[in-house]
Image (cartoon, rainbow, N blue to C red; front, side, top):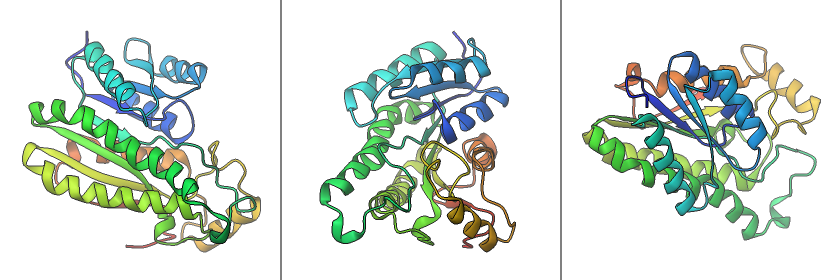
Length: 253
């Protein structure tokens, strides 16, 4: 059992941005709970890249509260504590500007799918881990957002709406949890090159974003992961209720 180091739980961490976040925390000496939904092989590869003594892969559908409760219990049993939570899981969405439905073709079920994956998922995870953080009088909650609700380059209606709702949750929780030494923030990336969800994005969209960005480049998962590690660390103790955008300056707050 490891108790001397901080422990981070990352949802949807078997690939893409979640995997990069897990590896970045591991490089900083954190114990890492790698949550996955379906891809056990990829999750185990992430664990191996960090070290089997330092990381643990656990399956759970974040939309299922009972599964999430077991995820948190198993992670705490292994590492004795949980200090940081990163709500990264993305359920059933791809950034495909060609296939994206127009508003007139969307149903409420399309929106509900994203609300369940993003908002309900984060709610379940935070509800399960909050008693631990409150007892410790220390915690970092980092929700993964998007710059699309500031600049909807492509109107991904259902995805963007769910992420905007998550920002509302972020700020409400920050206001309530601060008294217990728990910070709650959002880190919002631009369109990332490349993850499974963005693999279908057309080259023209990536090129348009790069040309519109002060840094003249598309944001990478590593760019976002490094900021997530800082926001979820002890060093960011004065930061709460914030939405930090990592997109090379495409949007400016």
